Image (cartoon, rainbow, N blue to C red; front, side, top):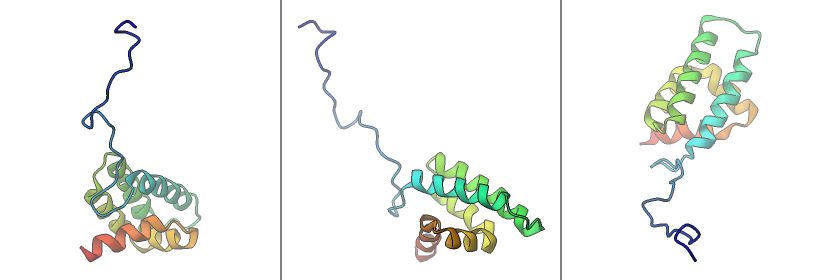
Length: 106
């Protein structure tokens, strides 16, 4: 068998690590939940200052989760405030509620 056709060995350094955070939150799941929540909140009829603040902070939280920055993602999620957290609970996006709860307990 030529060198080109031999399977290459893989060591632990070349394995892609999932985006599991130190607190146990799967950041990919969090990012997905944030995207869903942002779209849901952006589509509602409630267009007050707090509403816009929530949508913007959810977008920032989503970006930070995608980048693997759990702390910044949670900080932006907290800044989104009760409009976002209330809707997350209503929609059953519990990864968001758990993320805030876990950060508060640290």
